[in-house]
Image (cartoon, rainbow, N blue to C red):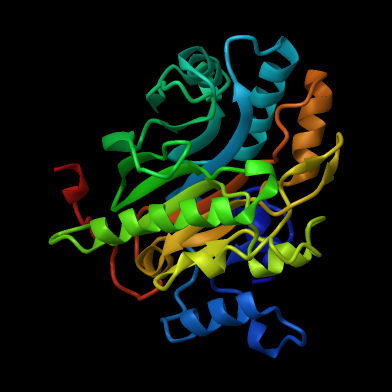
Length: 334
């Protein structure tokens, strides 16, 4: 099925969304190395067709730009309309948010979710940091446990949750790596610390091997750097240099904003474990920027200095390996 049809079928991602089960991409000339690597890793798996949209869950990740108690009405409206675009047609849904300034900001963001957030579960812990991370889950998503990760050397504490959605379960982290005036070494050092924690947890007996790390990394993928305004900065090292084996970085599109409608740099990503990639993952990409801009024009203000990204995953049926999805359990919660 052509990429654009998959995108339209599942949700409003950009035309460059990364996905599984497409045309024979190995025949395309000039294919970026990242896509070749993704294709090689998927090629040996059974080519099962994508599930129908009703069997999909969705994760949206959005840096909401220091959302606190003084948010204007136009910003609130822009967030509500933008989230409406990002979540349209979704089944069970999860929002990983970054730069939630305080409890008031978390309350404000909750009210911008579908149904004014009445049936959503909020997982948030206020700290002295104005750039907290949070996770919001809709009905149909079971939150098994959650909390901040206090990792020495990581400025903005990642927020972790173990989730069960139908026949799928996984550990989700919402993260925001330090910008530090664009110093990639600071961001890369924090990412290595977070990945060290993830690998320690994954190595424990009975651990769920499915991980998704979502957020604003202030680092680009190899392909995303080439598409970014900072492409010529030699010190801005690609995210893959700090990621390590067993995980892949998704979303190459620039998502930090330049002005009202433009984009600048590829900062926002989903990092997924091979197990999640092989079983649950279906498609990921930036939410259509034109849709978000249209929502903001309707609201009369800008939602954030980032555009949101989204990922869909299987919650039922068979994974890419052709085997039925199974629940691994919430051992991380013990």
